[in-house]
Length: 315
Image 1: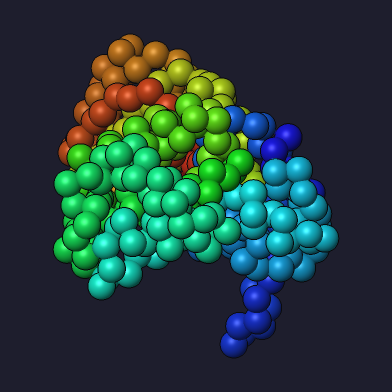
Image 2: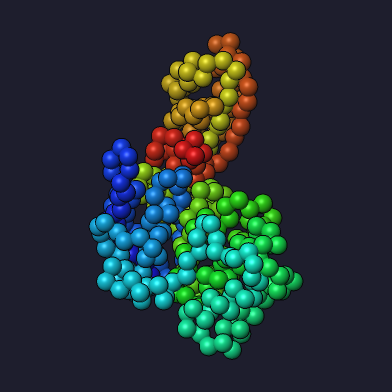
């Protein structure tokens, strides 16, 4: 395994006492994977990532990253990994090319080799048109591409990406997904944190879902969704959802019912046959339907099944 942790823990002192940010995380990431760390803000994603990147010292547990013991030899870990923070690291008053050359020099590259790698990164990340402009003139998507180029200029074995597409528009996000896939194609292991469900589903070979500092699920996106059998029917009513839930939950076609802040989620074997029965049940009780939707289980449904609430509610 390229990354392996056992019982990784981290706490912080707060006004009201000690906050356990990460509570015994066990992970095993294979070489060449795109591994996703999915969870709401405050769940422990970034704290875990910062420990693996040697930016925080764990309170307990063990970890190896790129074949190196995290606690015994953090300096060697740093040499073998790349890290791209959520806030980025570009400087406003320098150019992308200057940033890349400087980063290469920090990793011990000679001047000529640093310039050569900077030129290769500029081409690979499609930065050629604006590589010699000051970074303050870049769009969010352009800046994020420079951030990732900086993180891999020294050709690391593992690259950690913290919320790589946060705040980007849909077009820039799609472009960033292609860049992440390209890194894996070049032989890197990619460990990324995200709270975007569709991002984890589309990009990741495997996903770990973290909540309140603990792993609640870990598998491929397809296997995780397979745990939630059948279809999901989302029902909104104009009146009391509690009354609708009381009527629908005992129905034989409902495998499970969950109430969210805005609607009801019915887990059923076959949505096409369940919807007419839902309509008849509600209509017979005089409950006015506001909306009804049918969809396949998502990672949000997995999160709901494991925690009792949706990921979006947790945000």
